[in-house]
Amino acid sequence: MIRNQVAVVGYAHSSIERRADRPLGAVAVDTARAAIADAGLTVDAVDGFVGSSMLPSAGAHQAVDGVSVVSSTWLARSLGALPRHVAGFDGIGQVSGSVAMAVNALISGAADYVVVHRALHNPVGSYHGNTMRDIRGAQQWTAPQGFFGPLAMIALPYNEYLQRFGARRESMAAVVTEARKNGARLPWSHWRDRPLTVDQYLAEPALVDPVCRLDCDIPVDGVAAFVLTSADRAKDLPNQPVYVAGFASSAGAPRRLPLHWPLDDILDGGVDTVQRLWQQTGLTIEDVDLPQVYDGFSPFVWFWLEVLGICPVGEAHRFVDAGGIDSDRPGAVPALSGGGALGNGRMHGVPQMLECYLQLSRRAGDRQRDVSVGVACQSSPHYGGVVAYTSSPI
Image 1 (cartoon, rainbow, N blue to C red):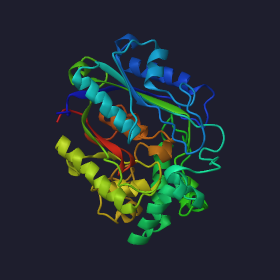
Image 2 (cartoon, rainbow, N blue to C red; image 1 turned 90 degrees about the vertical axis):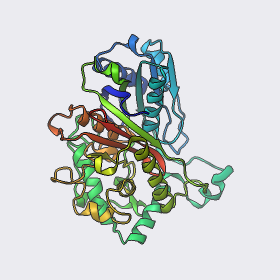
Image 3 (cartoon, helix red, strand yellow; image 1 turned 120 degrees about the vertical axis):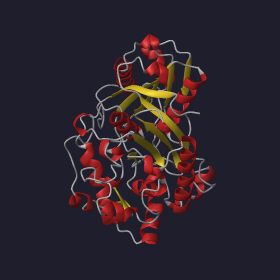
């Protein structure tokens, strides 16, 4: 059993900037040191490091450790640590997958205290600029025809959703403005003090119809780190522990052409992922009072709301349009209360995990909610992962 055995006991988050004035590695070292200190520990006590160093660019940018990416090995060495367990997650859902690896390491006894980090970089130049002059492999069937990169990938199921369920692009304004409203309240957010109006959103032209610039999280430089340990050790540390109740990673989509994500694949795969989470934890969606859905692209919010069972399939656009996720509305589902990726910057699943940790550990300050069970989602429902957290053992 996974639940109740591991807890998150500390964190740190750098400022999120379009482009930082220091190397990503330097920011990562400072952030990791701050997280370790926040947990009431010293570097020499940390004997486990887990993270994902994937550079999420469809262009030709080079991944250089300590510069454009930060691996667990590089971070441990740069901190001067002597770990017993170092691992890098290379799969579906970078943050949720890293948490799962850390939990397994702690339960198995491979480590006693584990730092989980994610460091994101915004390279100079066009983030998804296509420099390819010839195409080989599977992309030869899509890239020459212009079906290239993540915008085309998400535009396909987004269009399918609009057409199948009678949704309107105007309804998506409620998603993006909600994320920006909540992100504007956070001191570390790229969008701090910069909420978005519906008119501003609707004035944006489409990049790949119907996706506009504001439907996409903005590439940034930023680092977050969390410290995890056993539930028994957590009792002796200064912060209220937040327990990992369980996790599930997507099985992966059916074999398709590159970037071909049909809507049915997303919804069916997402339901399977979520059902495996419920089976592992014994929870249901009725137990969850803090779902944090992923929003690297705004349509993901609709998809996650439906696969989690918060609203029926095909109804998320109406649910959100009616104020269903308005975090300032009594009785609404605070699905983007942590700002998400659209309200913070491209930090992958960090905003979702962080909001669960802050709220459940009672460290959210004037944003504090009366919640006890959170679910942090990452990436697409059929190509990502979910982690359930609780404020007390279940």
